Length: 397
Image (tube, rainbow, N blue to C red):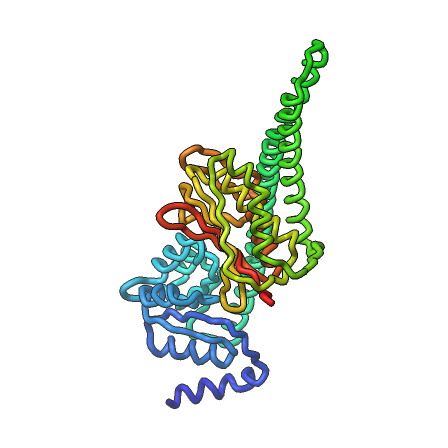
C-alpha cells in the first residue's frame, strides 16, 4: 500500500497535465510488483491498460481485444517475450501493433534480437515514467501513421477493384444490350430484305404475305421500343425525374382490357389467360406505370415460363391495400433466386432451355415503379408448380 502511495506521489505533477488517450496498453510482465507498477504508471499517464503474467495469457487477451501497444517482458514462464513476438509477427493483423520490450540492464542482447524481430523500442528496468511516456508517445504516433497509410492503401485498392468491376459490368451491359437489340433488328432486316428482294425480282407480293412481314416488323420494333423505354424509365426513376400521374382506376375494366390486349399473343404460345377481380373499389394510382408493370410480368411469362399453359391475373383486397397477382404454371423460379430477380441487369435463365430473360430491366422496372407508387412487389412459388408475382398497391378509395 505504501509503495502504491509513493508511486502516485512521484507522478502527481505529471498527472495534473496528463490527458486521457483512450488508448489500450497491454502489460506483459511476470513479476507482480513490476506489472502493478507499470499499470499504475499507465493509469496516471491517461492510458487504459490490461495486464498478463505470461505470453500465453497475453495472446488470449489480444484475441479478445487488440491493444494499441504492448509492453512486453522477455524472460517469462509458459511463453517468453521472444515467442510472443514471433507469434505477432506471423499474423498480418497483429504484426502492426507496436511492441516495446521491457528489459533489465543485463538483457541487452535479447533486446537487440527482439528489435530485429519486430519490436519498435525498449524500456529499461527500473522504470522511469518520463521515458515510458516518451516511448509510448513515439510508438503510437508511428502506429497512427502506419494505420493511415494502410487505410489509404486499402481505400485505393478497393477503388481500383470497384473500377474494374464497374468496367466489367459496363462491358457486360453493353454486350447484353447489343445482343438483345440485335435480335429484333435482325427480324426487321430479314423481313425488309425479303420485301426488297421480291420487288427487285418483279415478284408480286400478296396482301397476306405483306401483312405478315409488316406484323413481324411491327412486333420487332415494339420489342426494341420496350427495351429502350425500360432503360430510359429506370434511369429516370433512379434520378427521381419520373413524373407520377395518379387517377381512379376501375380494376375490373383495367384487367380485362389488358387481358384482351394479350389474347392473340397468349394463343400463339399456347397459354390461356384468366382474370378474377375480387374488389369493385377503384384504385388511386398511375395507370401507365401500373399497366407497364403488369404487362412486363405477362410478357415474361409468355417468353420464359417454360411449360406454362395458363396465366391467372387476380386482384384481391388486402386490408387498406390491394394485391395484383400474376401467376403461371410453368417451371418456376428457384427459391434461392427470389431475392435477386428484381436486381437491375440480373438475367434469369431457364433451367430447361438455357434462355436468358432479356437485359434484366423488366423486373427491376417493376420493383422501382411499385416503390415509386408507394407499394411493393414480391415473387413466390405457386402450387404445384409455377411462379406468382404479387404487386401490392396502396390507396383503395
